[in-house]
Image 1 (cartoon, rainbow, N blue to C red):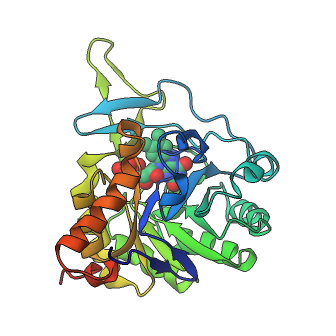
Image 2 (image 1 turned 90 degrees about the vertical axis):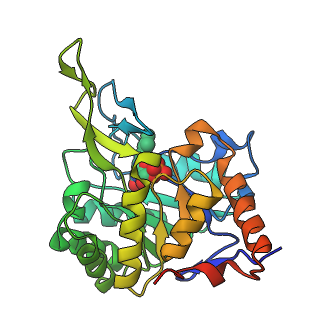
Image 3 (image 1 turned 30 degrees about the vertical axis):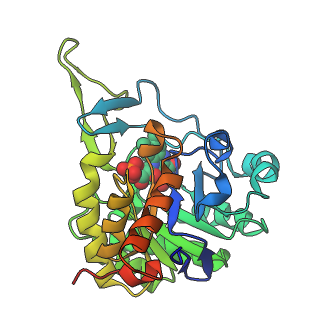
Amino acid sequence: MARLNVKIGELSLKNPVMTASGTFGYGLEFADFMPLDGIGGIIVKGTTLKPREGNDYPRMAETASGMLNCVGLQNKGVDYFCEHIYPQIKDIDTNMIVNVSGSSPEDYAECAARIDALDKIPAIELNISCPNVKDGGMAFGVTCAGASSVVKAVRERYHKTLIVKLSPNVTDITEIARSVEAEGADSVSLINTLMGMAIDIEKRKRVLSIGTGGLSGPAVKPVALRMVYQVAKAVKIPVIGLGGICSAKDAIEFLMAGATAIEIGTANFLDPAVSIKVRDGINDWLDGHGCQSVEEIIGVIS
Ligand SMILES: Cc1cc2nc3c(=O)[nH]c(=O)nc-3n(C[C@H](O)[C@H](O)[C@H](O)COP(=O)(O)O)c2cc1C
């Protein structure tokens, strides 16, 4: 058995496989399908300071090798999370990470501060890249000034591992990565979804309620891989790679491109146990290639 453990800042992961926010609920929903403590971390649903209803339906559409969604951060707010969800997930023996979103630097920071108080949440992932909300979300993630302002405000009030999730809907993602690193992010994760659109030709209308949505799944993998490669070369902090990962081979590509860990999103909808299979597949590949540790393959691509 190769050693699979990796570190993201202060955070120790038993293996580099995590599940992506918005595709794995609070983890509990998947407990019948796989051992939740078998993976390195679970990034739970997007959480905001105040409850959000999300967008109207339809908010999902299937596409070639992927899907579009415009769920729009539906959640019951951080206080509900602390009171009702946290007690149910706090003893799951893996890193339970909360994905935090907001409409201003101040409410990102307030939401993060409330989560800072929860002993068994060792990290947050800051979503400055949601393409499906009008107020905030991706707006912060597409300029260096916007991204810096959120990370600065959060860093003042959040003292544990801070992962910042980047938007691919930019010209140069390395600039944004560098600006959040400069404000004290411990890691960056990428990519969030790519802005897309689908049309119903019979109705002569756009399929999704708000017209556009975020594209995810295998269709985005080459774009995500290219961005992870570029960002890993541009920053010193560890990079978490995601976007279209469905198999151990996909995950190994991201690790070789420079990701220290990976997240699996849309693939959970097709196979709820995919993350454990990816973990085992990485291990088998490392064993089969005489590697003692997963660290031997991280960033090997020049
Ligand atoms: C239905 C759905 C809901 C999502 N909700 C969130 C969210 O709340 N916060 C977030 O940061 N990303 C969210 N995402 C983006 C995913 O976490 C991930 O970044 C993206 O889907 C790319 O990875 P994948 O191709 O493996 O799915 C969502 C994606 C989907 C498909």
